[in-house]
Image (tube, rainbow, N blue to C red; front, top):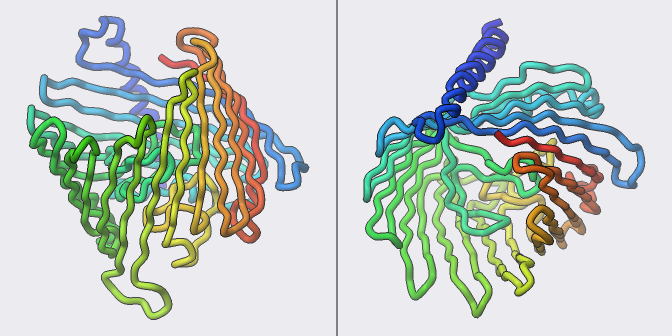
Length: 391
C-alpha cells in the first residue's frame, strides 16, 4: 500500500511543481529557473522474425528537464520522463511490470503507475543533482550521467551508466546515483574521481580517471572497483589523415575466484569516423566483447542497457552507419550491425523531417535477423513513426 501511495502522490506532485516553475519562462531567459522538454507519440507496427503476425504498439512519451541556476557557480537539475505504453505482448509477459519498474540506483526513482494486460504506465527520474563549479573544480552529487565513453557505438570505459545502442528513443541516456569530483589541470587535462554507492556493496562502482592530450590525441586512463571486480583501462580520440580515430578498452578481474568461470576478461572497441565532402557522416566500429557467455543471464528487452564487462549479445560486433542532412529540414541515416559469431544482424534506417520550429517527425525501422538461441532471434522487426513537440 505504501508503494502505491508513493506512486500516485510523488510523481504527480513533482510534475505539478515542475510545470509551475516552468511558468517562469514567460519572464524570458533572465530567469534562473528554466523548464524544457517534449511530448512525443510513437505508434509502431511490429512483425515477428518471419515478417508475419503483425501487431500494433504505441507510446506517449513526455520528458521534463528543469534547471535552477542558484548562483554563478551553483545549479540544480531535475530531469525525468513519463511513458504510457500499449503493446499486446505485455499480456504474455507478466514480469514486464517489474522490468520497467526496476531501478539500479541507490534511491528508487522508477514507478509503474499503470499495469494492465496490454498497458504500462511508467515514470522515472534519471537526473537529480546539484553541481558546483569554479575555474578548476567541478563537483556534482546526485543522479547524473557520468560519461567516460569515447566511442560512438560501444563504450567499455563507461563504468557508471552504459546505454543500449538499440534504444534510439532514449537520447538522454540513463543516469547513476553518484558523487563526482573533477579537477582541471589545464584546458586539455583533468583528474576525475566518481563513486556510485549501491544498496548492496558488491554492486557499487568507484573509479578514477586521468585525461590528457598527447601529440594531438586525447588520452584517458582509468582504474577502479566495478561490482566486485577490478577494472583498468583507457581510451583515445584523434585523427588519421582526415578521419577520426577513437577507441577504448577495459580489463575486468574478479576479486573473488569462481571455480566455474574465467576470472578476467577484456572488452575493447575501436572505430573510424569520416565526414564526406557532401555532408555524409560515416562510422565504422569493431567490438571485441570478452565477457560474452561468461555468466548466464536472460534479457527480456533488447533495449535494456548491458554491463560494460559484457556489453553486447555476442563476442564480436561490427557496426557501419551513415547519416546525412539532405536539406535544412530533412535528414536520414542507416546503421548496420553484424554479430558474426552468433550469425545475427541488425538494420536501422531512419528519416527525419522538421515540420515546424518545435515539431519534428521521424520514421525509424529496426530489423533483427538471425542469432539462433539469442534475443535477436525473437526480436523480429518494428516500424516506428514519431511525432514530437518540444517546448
